Length: 167
Image 1 (cartoon, one colour):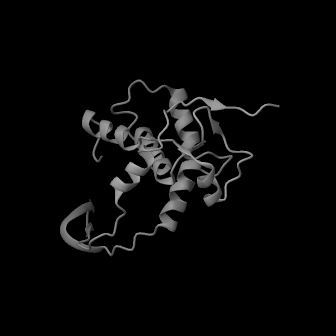
Image 2 (cartoon, one colour; image 1 turned 90 degrees about the horizontal axis):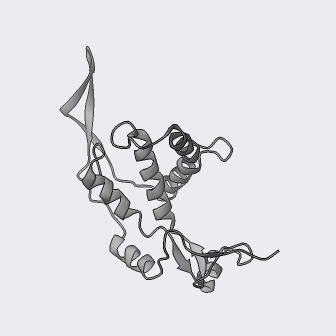
Image 3 (cartoon, helix red, strand yellow; image 1 turned 30 degrees about the vertical axis):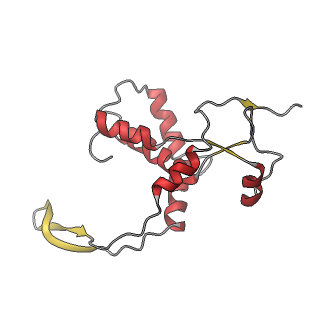
């Protein structure tokens, strides 16, 4: 995932974001406190839904494309870049993606302790060196495969047929 965009890490990001959407049941909606009245119904049955983690991955992926737009995304137009800027940090709805990532980081605070070392310190300017951060602490992570399995059982296509309420 890291480094400048290349075929391998771009494919890894593209694969990681799928499935973006899944079909939520009426029971799922009730458990989350969502209203059935204004939820989007799927033609195949159920309601259009997505997990927050996939939305955050979507935001990070968009941020990556925007930051590296001059490297491997020659086909991006100025209109695409304007859309990305708006989607990432929309003035009207305080930075849709940035705000979503901020809330996620605060709600799921990683308390891994980082220390610093002079080994591999970076030269900043004459007389100023920046120590490198490091951490050997083990992180406690969710079982990603379990999340993928759960959402894949309920996945819907990227452009599903949606039912619009009459009226």
